[in-house]
Length: 198
Image (tube, rainbow, N blue to C red; front, side):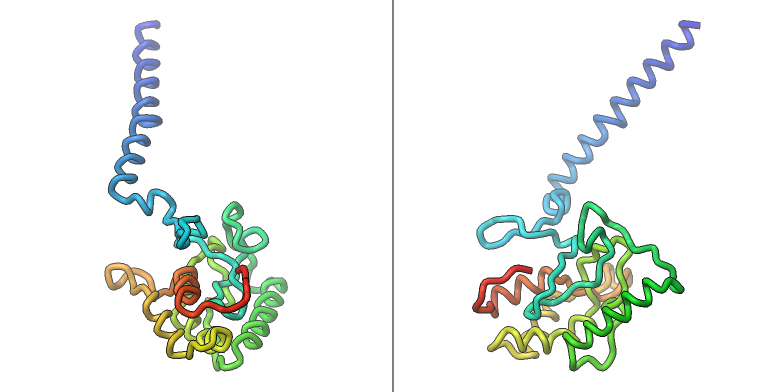
């Protein structure tokens, strides 16, 4: 019996070391060398070198001079420790109430909008989608420009266009605008006078 147990124990220990320790350390090392930014969380730093976010995670920008992200159901909103959707079904009155309220707020914030893009009202599955659609960003350009004099709508649109990514490999996904990248570019080129947060 010992002759049968010993090889099983040795193989378990060996494969635990290989797949539980060696393989993860090797893959982490390769990722750190080949893709250092991505392996480190795609962190974004300010001019002083301080981490201010990740290009992969949404933040709750709400002030009028900023591009606003999609709504979030992650925790109390944009909480990376509580990533997830609301899981509300299409017939749930809570979803209808939330979308009606969000639509009214969107129209109030962006009075030039003739239509509300779908991603301005719908949350993503993670609640942390860092991007908005180009249509959503374009609707917000007038509000942003009005709160960032001397920037014009064309100036804001140029920053949005510069931060619009096309589908991966030309066909995977849709065009998208990174909210944090746009807001950092706006702060750099057209800063507002008063101190502000998100």
